[in-house]
Image (cartoon, rainbow, N blue to C red; front, side, top):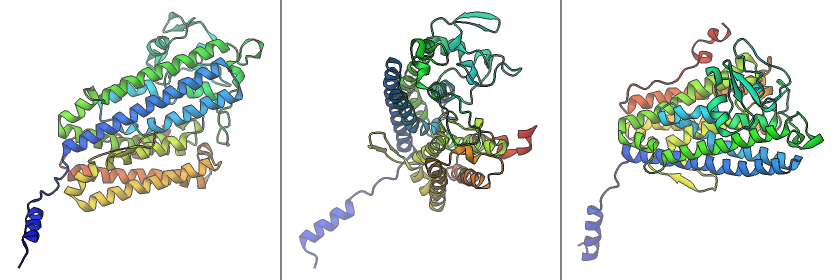
Length: 418
């Protein structure tokens, strides 16, 4: 006979509700929370970068220049993890070119060792730092004061040429490192701190204007990141758009994952450089930080699928994940995609480890370097494979109308050389 106590316990156990399966609404809330945290971290690290830039300008030295460079490198870690929010979210796509456009014709900004105006870009040798008066599209521009407005409203993508990048992380990167003149040999840019010195100690000329440009670009980066962080906070446009319609929201997630994985990272950022053997195709080409940019792009994709993001302070933002939806629809596919993402991170991690040991990414791109090509193409192949699993997840969830961004380097390689 069952005792009264046991019977009560059994009845309680029988009546206890089963945990509810995660639905799209919870998954979309996690996605928005990760976006908000990533952009807030990007903003916070950019504010640290601004403090370091101000210290460099106030007291130029090897120490303050190196500190500013380290702050820039740290700022890239959270930002690269937010790139997965591109492609599927209009609020991000319409904004992203302000902060992360590349490659750039750096002669637009400051002195360069080689380069200048071309038929493709007559402003490639404009050199804003050296010239207080500019001529753009036949119009004379007063650039005596270098301000955020001058950079964003007049110079950025001037003449509607995408290579005229005047703002964002890569403009700042160039001003901190200078050109990387090492080709496919080891070594990053080597701008001296005296490019920010005063009086006769100034090298490169126009040190005060160079400092003004660096300060204006950093201030502008912060205001742009303030805007985007607000878009994903409660009541923000990005959060509202992605959570208002479950189908549209899931479509945005998978479009961003697939397009970054395939056309953008595997194609434009990685395979194209291998095909052309061109270090100018590095994403962070002045600082030789491309291995980290690739790694954290990949991590951003994995974050979104697994519904977890580690913030720069070590805390974790997590919640119901896209993985849980896929697992409910097709457990074997969830296992496949989870494993594919982990494999990609191992491949990207091998590139990162090699670069940190002194075998830089631009060396991997050198013609005839079979070892370097194998490292890069291992990650390219993994990214392509995970994209195929992402596309199967689209089908498993009953979604359609998702267009993954392509790349000639992957889809029609012969066109690259035409």
